[in-house]
Image 1 (cartoon, one colour):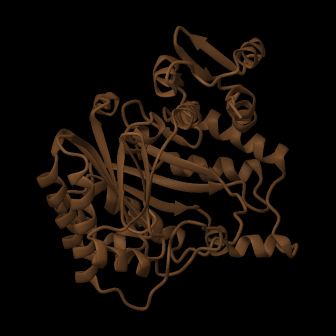
Image 2: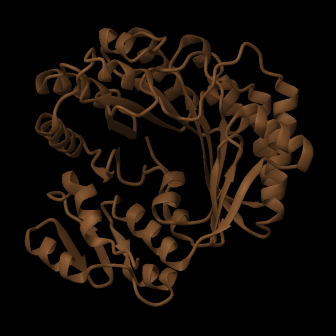
Length: 390
């Protein structure tokens, strides 16, 4: 499948829009996202509120070109297609749209939601991100997923027919998962031919049901060494399949990277609307009210769901750009980081030199990156390299 170019994400004036739909049919035991189960949702009220929140952000970001829209959640494939269409049409009225705009919607791979894919494509969605999470039925039950493997694979087929671009999510380093089992599962996923894969190691997040299970000794995930082996195995297999890692957990065919997420990682501006959505707007950090009812009430009172809008100090902006950019295989432009910092990039150059000598980092001109050998140690590298003026 021919994929569109990614040049637009490198335009510093290109804006990304994130739309949060917070509702799910059920809460997965590993999930710490802002997702909620509700018996009923007033679809007309939610559509009106999202459009109002969008109009508010657009009024503060005039004259921009929109490069991507991302419907995240929650489970955005539960949104009525007419709501998705209304938001896309409104965004097109507020901003000019890049000719190759990427419009992504996250979806569960159930037969019920797959039945909506054609209508979502007609609404303007051109990229689907499917939460397969596993190609093993027992693992899907452990992860609290409502679909089975056969249903998930069928949904991938429907998505590939409906959308120009398709990504799939998988979770690995699960309890008891062996390298051989993951090799077979990842191999089957790569054989599906999707242009993009998001491959995440299972982590125990505070406040989740898995955290309770782990604390009680009923759930054990692979230790650090075993997880590292699976990480390296993942990198090798995706690279061999022509889907190399372009970010810590994201893999794509050349040109098929997620443009929306690249805006985050390259530290561009993005508007966030809907419950709990974050944004970065001209040096301001924005956040919406998190609880759905609180956000809805705020929109009704104020015309928008903003809870906080805070100026980011120069050092914080530069630090965020470093932390995000060093997740990318392409690395980060230190000249731009220095500009964000007001003159000097917050980097420990002695640490960079030491880590480069160890083959964990590399520098080419003004571009700094973490090497393939260093990717596994990214968190430790960031701790050493990024400086804190306090």
